Image (cartoon, helix red, strand yellow):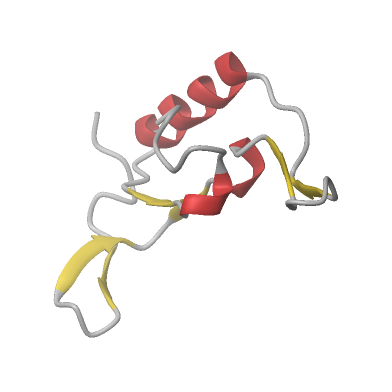
Length: 81
């Protein structure tokens, strides 16, 4: 499936890596986590099936850049995606 975003590319910083111009920020699908003393951090409770559906829809629409970080999900990025 070709989308309007297939041709839209950007170079990622000075890395020379080309990626899609549109990105999907994964903070909201990161789930709950907390500080060492129990203070709440993160987005809150999430539905993993809904998160996977959102990732698949983004891919269907041509998104190829997914912003993740170690702190976006307990245990590290990519547990869902």
